[in-house]
Image (tube, rainbow, N blue to C red; front, side, top):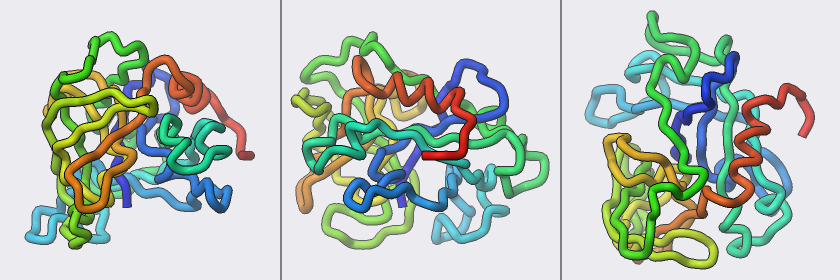
Length: 229
C-alpha cells in the first residue's frame, strides 16, 4: 500500500501521470517491477472504515496504471544509498483504465485536478521552511494498523545530502509516495515525495525532485509507448 498524486503532464494527450516513490513501483532487491497497480483518488467510501475493495463507492472510482518509470539510480543502488532516487512516475491510459461511478471522466487528469511539480526548486525552500507531507498511511509509527485515510504532517524542513527531512511527522507505512508541498490544499508545487521514516520516531523524509533524474523519468513517462522494461 502506497500513496500517489496526479501531476500535470502539460496537456500530453492519451495518458495521465502519477508521482509516487520508486520503492512502491520497483523492488530493487529482487530487480522486478510490481505487476499490478490500482490508484484510488480521494479514497473514501463514506463509511466508518474509510475504504473497501469496491471501486464504485469511492468519489471517483479506481484507475489501473499501465506501467511505471524509475531512475536507474534506484534499481542499481542499495538502500539507503539510493534514497536520492526514490521517486517514480506511473502512466495511466485515458481509456480502458477506469472503473467506478458512472459519469466520471475516464481520463484521470480530467476527472481530478492535477498538481504541479517543482523541477527547479523555484519555491526557494531552505532549511527551516515549513511544509506538508501528505499520504494515506495504513500504519502509525508504532506499527498499529489504521484505516487508510488522508493525513498530513506540518513542520520545518532540514536539508540532507539525500533530500529533505521533517522531524515532526508521525505517519507510517502507506504514506510512501505521498507528496510534499507547502500547502495541504494543493496550493503549491510538489517538491518531494515521502520516502522513508524512522521506526518509533516522528521523522520522515524524501528525495529532491529538482536538478536530478526526476525530470528525465518524467519526460520518458510522457512519451514512452513500448512494452519492454
